[in-house]
Image 1 (cartoon, rainbow, N blue to C red):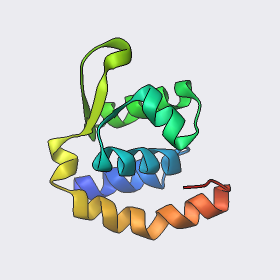
Image 2 (image 1 turned 45 degrees about the horizontal axis):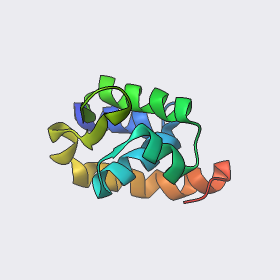
Image 3 (image 1 turned 180 degrees about the vertical axis):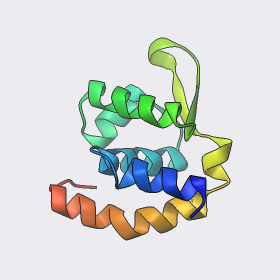
Image 4 (image 1 turned 45 degrees about the vertical axis):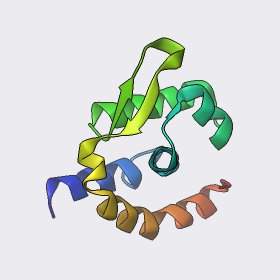
Length: 105
């Protein structure tokens, strides 16, 4: 298993909050957004969104442009080049996790 596959499995399935990180990445692949927009869209607390964005950015899966409240998040080049791998893993675990945790899309 390559390093990116291990990282995605850990971020999405191997740690608490993986389902929310997967949902965040799904949305960022659709449209770059700021934390407030993501909070409203995913109906999650703003601080929760900020925490997950920090984890994703720390692991080089997303990048940001701007400052403070205007900061916009995008999938990183690393994630973009492994989008198929993300979709494969998220396809296996995403819907099951959402159902198990009672979350809505």
